[in-house]
Image 1: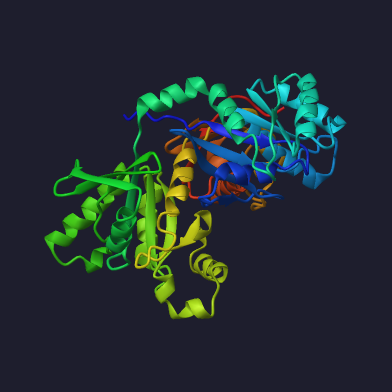
Image 2 (image 1 turned 90 degrees about the vertical axis):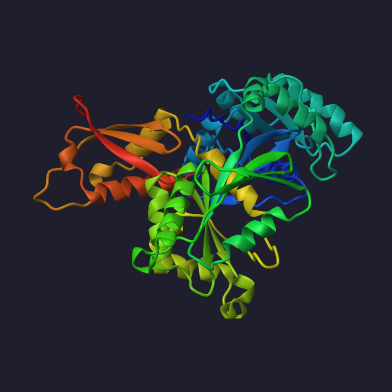
Length: 447
């Protein structure tokens, strides 16, 4: 089994209006990496992958930390922040140089201490020499020397990045030794533009390409490097429905493509804008899900589609989800394999999906979530007995798996399973990530 390495996670926290989102955007840099929005219950949590030197990090932007507020909406925001903090390798606590230390900063400080995570104290809005000097007062919060930055004037970023690197030395050494190549399979029906997409992806500036024989007969694996990251692009043929397979060549092509999906970390499924989603596309998605692979949906030929003049991308997404509700579980983007529009940007989304395959959700967070929204309350027939859902824990990643312990597994019906899947997707960064829920019997009874 390949030795997968977990990408370090950098979580930005702090009270409202200190510049967390500005810092998030600044760290992303001028390349404007594509960001997948992870919809929570009240406020979207943003995640992206950044490079610091030769290393990759997942960076997470959270909502404002209003620790004293008891409102229901803000309590839900707080739960999302707690999850991001529990997952993080290092925390960036952002404060405001102009306002100085506030009571809210001290409350946030006391909460972060409970997590026992490395904290880099960032004093934003240090826009001049006086504010930079006064930022040293934040030392009293107890997180070491504060890093004075100015997102407005682009100052202090080098010191901040150095502190992030020094806080994750152990994880980075493992990342460097592993040298993992992210394996991508580009799949889809015949004639959706897979070859054009691959050719455009590889025929770009700053992309280094080499080809070697793959592990499957007559296939070619293409290694390429972009922006310091190494990728393996796995060759695939068009996947067609059984009734459309007319020769042994077609049969072998489908087998080879399915093998490519099994070998990949992340699958890019290309759709034709003119056709929307077809039954064959859904069949491919079935196979992707069966094998627990992360998946990005790319709508190709959007620039050639007549409807592009009358329909926005968001409206088209809604049309896709209406045609097949399962597509709502996946990130959807628009590309042109012919002109190259957004082709390279799709790599940012692929990297983020790959990072989220290593998701490790703390058991206490999961059980707090299930305590608030107990699956046993799902409406069922009066003739049926309700199961007792005792506790939940994550038991695997790559593919992601959760185990739910109940008093009697035979009482769990599809309505319970659907409820739990939706609850997990609403509260965890699982967009584009298939996962399993395993029902297990427990001898313990709920008190």
